[in-house]
Structure formats: C-alpha cells, structure tokens
Length: 424
Image 1 (cartoon, one colour):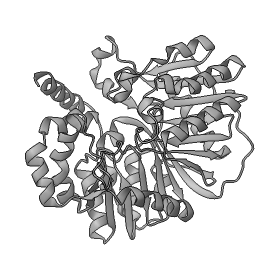
Image 2 (cartoon, one colour):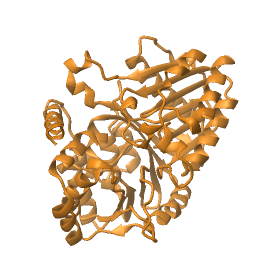
Image 3 (cartoon, one colour):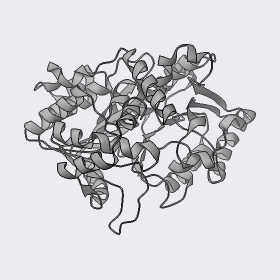
C-alpha cells in the first residue's frame, strides 16, 4: 500500500507539471450552431473518404485476417501498437510478418515502451518482439522506460496509445486491439471485447501513413520519408470521414473532436467509454448535451483486476451526478457469468456519426496519450454498429445513483481513482 500511495502521489506531481487543457469542451466553437463538419476541420480533423469497412469484434477472427494481410503484402507494412508481444497463439501472425520482411517487403513496427510492463493476462504468455529484427523487421520502441528518461519523469506519462496498420498504400486499419495475447490470442470467449476496422481506402491509407512517419521520426534515429511509401490510386470512398491524430507535430485536438460531437448532437449519443474519468470541462460538455435533451448513454466495463474496480466505483456517483448521463456497467452476462473485459472504443451520435479508433473517452486520452480517432459520417455504418452495441447493452446493468453511492462506500478507493486519472 505504501508503494501504491507513493506512485499515486508521484503521478499527481507529474500531472501538475504538464501543461494541458480540455477547454475545447466549453469553447464557443464547440457549443455553437456551426455545421459539425466545420467544427471537426477547425479542431484539426483531416478529411478522408472511406468505404464501408470490414468489422471485427472477435480477436481470434481478427488474428486470422491480419495474418492473411501480412502474407499478401507486396511493398510495405506499417504498424503502430500500444502493447505488442508474442505468444504461441500469435506465432503464425508474427511468422507471416517475418516472411514478408524476408521476401523484401519493408516492415516497420512501432510499439510503446511500456509493452514489457503489460498488466493484463498477456504478461503470463508474452515474448518480447525483438526477435523480429533478425528477419529484417524495423522495430522501434516509443519512449522506452530507462534511467535516462527518469531524469525527465513527466515525459514518462506521455504514451503512444495508437493502433494502426497500413499495407501497400491501399489497406488501412484502425481500432482498439493491441497485438498481444489478451487482444487476439486468448481464444474465443476469452479475448477482450474489442474492435478493429479494415478499410480498402487510398485516402485513409495516405493520412495514416503520414501520421506513422511523423511519430516514427520522432522516436527513431532511422528517419523515413513520405515518398518511401507510395499510395494506391484514389478509390473514391463513399463516406466522408475525419481523422484525428493527437501525436508528434499534430495540431489535431481529440478534445475538440469529442466536444464538437457533444455540442452538435441533437437526439442521442451512445458510447463505450473505457475508464471514463472526466475532468470538469468534459463533465460540463456532457451535461450541456443532456440539458439540451440529448439522450447520452454510456456502457462501460469494470475491470476487476487489482486497483481498477475500486477506482471506477469511487468516481461512479460523481460521473452520474455531474453529467446526467445514463450509465450501464458491462461485467456479467445474463446468466451471471463474468464477461471478457469490454475494451472497445465506440461512439455513435444521432444514428449518423460513428467514432472509432484508439481514443478512450477519458482525461488521459484527451491530454496524456498519442491517439487516433476517426469520425465517419454514415447512417448505414451507424445502423450496423447500433445493432452490435445493443447486443452488448442488452446484458449490461443500469446503475442508479443510489447503487453507485453504495459501491463507492463499500468498494471505492480514492488512491485507485487518482492512479486511473493519470495512468489509466
């Protein structure tokens, strides 16, 4: 406990040393009647055109599909993942990646420096990915934890949380799954509940390629050039989308993206927020939407590992009181059996706009992590994802304020909450 208190206190000092803001949530632009598309571009969204994506909600299926994509690559593969490691179940995928490099495909893999500190069940199975270099894979860790970096500890809490894949300038992937055991290798019914989206889109591939090169060059002595990675001919995707990248050299605002959606919503917002620890501006943005008559529903997990549950239970009453949103927890199925952790990042606004990517709806994703999010204007996609979301909500439990207060009193922990605020 003493070590935990020290860690929480250290995180508080680190946060106070960072210059961050979520003022976008209460900005005149976000709350204005300006067209949503105008707001999204003003906050740094890059317009792209995308088709209907292939959607994967099962890690086992996604593992198989990604392995196929690596096996068929002919020119280059760019990958960024927050947590990356191997296990027996993932060996075929990594073998496909090594085979690609050995046949002359340029493979660049960026993993965050905290991969070796994975706190999920992955830690029981994981093998570090350094062996990939033997096959010619270019592998770089973003901001690895080291003695030198401890001289600037504030930098340690800025992590690269993005998940993306670009293959041959045509195939673009974005979503929430890491390349590790618990995301893809644990088997059906055991992998985390999550999502990945595959687009055959030159437009999105081009935008993601630029973002990858920027963060690679910020993390590596081996510099890349945009021209190293040609893009396929424009395929004219049928849906307009806006890519938000909060990373090296980017002016895009994840806060501004969410603030714009909250400020423009007219009827309903359904979201799956992972660890929705919000600051006062974020709470105000949600509250303003609710007071306009927007039905805001949050279906959230409670991670029963260690500190996480007690942190969630500590802030739950405040989340309900301060936002006015309807809160559901997704922990057990209709038979009372424990469900895999809901790690999916999904927002649906007015049955028209869909948000996917790596970004959680919490303070850390707004201000302390490099994130990717894609806002897609597509009633067709929204309808499909609403059906998916309803299957998850159907077994979720609505949390009343009274129940939330009971959980806080009996199981909540301020120090767990403090840790989640900065490190969750």
